[in-house]
Structure formats: structure tokens, C-alpha cells
Image (tube, rainbow, N blue to C red):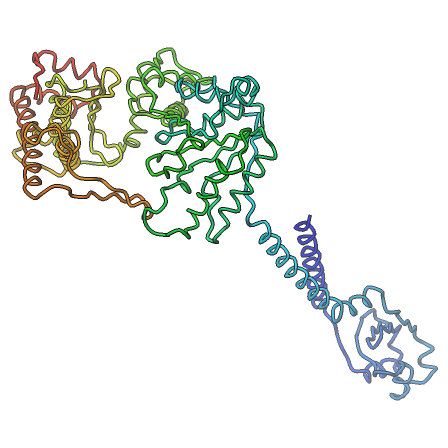
Amino acid sequence: MSKFYKNLFLSIVFLFLLVLTVSSIYQGTQPKQTVDISNVASQIKAGGVAGIAVDRNDLDVTLKNGQHIYSKKELDSSLTETLKNYGVTPDDLSKISLTVKDESQLDFWVGLIIPTVLPLLIIIGLFWYVTRQARGGINQAFTFGQANLKPFANFRDRVTFKDVAGLQEAKQELEEVVDFMKSPKKYFDIGARVPRGVLLMGPPGTGKTLLARAVAGEANVPFFHISASEFVEMFVGVGASRTRDAFATVKRAAPSILFIDEIDAVGRERGAGLGGSHDEREQTLNQILVEMDGFERDSRVIVLAATNRPDVLDPALLRPGRFDRRVVLDLPDIGEREEILKIHVKNKPLAGDVDLRKVATRTPGFSGADLANLVNEAAILAVKEGSEKIKQDYFYESIEKVMLGPARKSRLISEKEKEITAYHEAGHALVAAGLKDSDPVHKVSVVSRGRAGGYTLKLPLEEQHLKTKSQFLADIAVALGGHAAEKIIFNEITTGASNDLKEASELARLLVTRYGMSDKLGPMTFGKTQELIFLGREISTEKNYSEEVAEEIDKEVRNFIDRAYRAAQKILTAYRPALDKVAKALIEHEILEQDEFYTLVKGFHLKPAAV
């Protein structure tokens, strides 16, 4: 309402000034013929005046020919006295019509308001506005320590556990929390203690916030949610104050649930670097620890939190009595991806050829958020193509768009570059087809996407949680297949293989330093990785081995690279005709699907070998 009155006051002032301006402009545009009073007296004596209208000191003289002339009389004297001084007799005046106008009320108030009242009103208005702003600042200062808790009340878009595909173990853990909030007596009767805090851990997009919304939809208790970053401010003590206020609000509504999203914003390990004990973030964390399991305990409040960085959380936050139940959310497997896709395609028109199982097969490593984005991109593509239904090809196109970016079909390249790209991608695909430990090829393309000039899509036949040394070596050989093909065909190499070389080098070094797969160095890890918590996402590696060992590590990395490169060269040299055929097909068609690729190489009797 205060904003309404402010706008109303400003509008009235603006309209008033506008009316005055328009009025003055209108009056100034009227043509007036002004003469001296002596001229008016001469006209009266000559009998040429029909009437005179007196408006204070202004005279509107109407001549007998209908013309109007204007003049002014002397100040502080009447018109008859003024004219008498110029020789006009009373007989002359009796022959004309004299009219005296009274001062109008509008003119009176305008003359009064403009010089006196209007400036006063403006001063009062400015003083009121400044006072109101200062009062608002004082009120804000008193409420600065209050938490911006948001109660969940959006039941129109209610989410339940049935709307969450996969994550069976996670849902079971949270169903126990919901059941405790609904019927706590049966737990208390047997002496069970329900966890005070539940921590949802998992990569981004795996459904942590979605599960929290499902808990809010299932539990018939007050549900409050807040982001952990809202606790921390630049002023010391504000975070702790907001934490106390948040928990006090939740306790008043008990039994209730408090959801803290991205708790790693305040829950990072203390004493790990800059800031010291007076760091505002650490004070906030200390207050959270006390509220969750201090001297005053309230078992009717459950704290639900989510993070994708559990490794940086303070150990005191994870001990029993606080977040003693941790729910891990993994990336969905092929079956769960299919179920997630079924949820997202509800109420969407699908073509008869759509097979969500095949879509799930092509999306290993996709999170639930990625799959939701995939379905949305497919629907958008259907609209662009003018189709009333979403087809299977739209899903395939959207997969590549989510993974690599939109197709850059407008990018113009020379025929030579297209040929090099075709042989490069054919080299990747042929090496993948020639190694028994490599994943099968699903698609080969020379259409530029994102920063890639072309790409070879190879996907595993089944979900893999463990990888062998042979599989790693096959991946390195496939990565080097494009480089080897350029060397064999053109006896020259280009910058197109730079990212492949980087990927192969990093993978070979991991085999030696992290996975212990070097026969010479044995089952050991080398280098200690540390993260600088207070300086953002900065990772440093501590060298915990000698220079002699570093030299041996370099030799073993080089050995893995050379071994994989020789395997790639051997396959491409042995099946050179197949390489030419696949490359020419790519130059002609630009894209080869899985069936088309294996049909081309089928006649060459590829015998998959090990690296």
C-alpha cells in the first residue's frame, strides 16, 4: 500500500504540473493586439468603443467593428480615474458598456498554491520519503538475522515416490523417515531412535532435490526448505543467527522436516586453510552442529540435506547423532534410464517406432536431469520439423545434441578437410571394430558438433562398473586410431587429433599412477591429490616419489601409448580397403549408423584381436 500511495502522490504532482504547462502554452498561443491606455482613451472620445471588460489591471476593449484590443490600466486606481486623466468625460463613458470581472476561485488557488503551498508539499514529500527509507533500513537491520525459510505448500505440483523412477534403495531409506513422521509411536515403543539427519549424496542431476520434494509430498508434516548459501553473509554472526532462527522456526512446527540444499556451502571441513576460527562460514557450521546434536535435543525434527561434494564435508557433521544416515544416489543404469524416460514422455505424443530401451542403451552416464533435457529437446525438434509426434530419430538427434552440442551444418569446410575428417573418424571406428575389448560402434559422423569436427559414438553392450586393463588399452588404441589413420593415408598429421592425444595420455598415466596396472611398477599408486578448499575448485598433486620413480612412470606411460598405437596401426594397415570404403561412405553420406557401418565392414572378415 505504501508503494501505491507513493505512486499516487507522484502522479498527482505530475498531472498538476502538466496542466499548468499546457494552460500556459495555450494562453501564450492566443494572438493579442496590445495598445497604450492613451490609445483606448482616444478611441472612446472618438466613439469607436462598444464595451470594455475589466479583469483586474487588464482591459479587453471591444470596438464597434467587432475587433478586440487589449491594454492595461494604472495600478491601484480605477478605470474611470485613469480615463479621466486622459480627458474622457462621464458622458463619453456612459455611451459604452463597462464590465468588471470578479477574480475566479481557480485563479486564486493557483496563485496561492504555486508560490507557497506547492514548494512546501514537495519538501514534506521528500522528507517523508527519506524518513520511510531510513525506517525500512532500521527494520531490515532488526530482521537481518532471520532465516528466509520457505514452507513447502505447492501441492498442485505434488511429487511422490511413485514419480521418482529408479533409486529403489534411496526411496526405501526415505520411506522410513516418512513413516516415522506419520506414526512415531511404534518406533518409540520398541526403543528405536530415528536418525536426526539424512544426507543425500550423489552427482549433479541424480535426483537429490526431486527426492526431497517427494518426501515433502509424502509426509503429512510441515516441510521447510532453504539453501545453505542463504545462511552466510558478509557480516560476522549473521549466519549463526539465521541458523538459530531457522531451527527455532522448525521446532515450533514440530514434528517437521528441514531441507538444506547444497549443504557443502557451509559444511566444508574446518581448519583446512584460510579464515581461522573467526571465519563466518565456520561459525555457521558450528551453530548447525549444536542445533542438530547439542544439549537441547528435539527428536521430532529431521534435517534433510543434499550435496554433490560429500568428500569436503566436516567429519563432525557426518558423525552419528547428526547426519548419521547417508543416502547415495548413483547415475541410473539402463533399466532405470528406461523408467525415467517413461515418466518424462507421459502426456507426449510418441510415434509408433519409438523404442525407449534403445534410447536408454545410447545414454550411459546420463543423469535424470540429462534424460529430462533429452526428452525436451526431442519434443522441440519435433515442433521444428513440423511433426505432430516425437519420432525415434528425434531422440537419437537429441542424444548427440546433449552430449556434443548442436550440429553445425552451416560450417563450410573444404573437400580436403572433409576427406581428412572422414579418414580420421573411419580410423576410430575401424580400430574399435577390430579390438575384442572395445565397445561396439553405434554411429560415425563427419558433421561438426560443438568443438568436434566429427565423432565416433561407441557404447557398451551392458552396464559396466569395473574395467579391465585390456579394456583401458583398447580405449587408448581407439583414441589413437584417428591419428594413425591420418599418418597412414596422408603421411601427415593434423591438429584434429589433439583432444584424442590428450585423452589417451591421461588414461595411460592413470593406468600407471592410480590403478596400479603397470607390470614393472606393480600394484602401487603414485602422487597424493589434495584439494585447496578455500580457493575454489583447485586441485594440486603432491609428488610423493623420487625422480627415479618419476622416470619409470614416464617410461611406462610411453610403453602403454606405443603398445596401443601399434595395435591401431596394425588393424588399419591390415584392413586398408575397409578403411577406404568407410571413409568414402562418410564423404558421401556424412553419417553412418551402426547397421550401415557393420554392413560395410562385414565383407572384410574383421577378426577382433587384443591389444
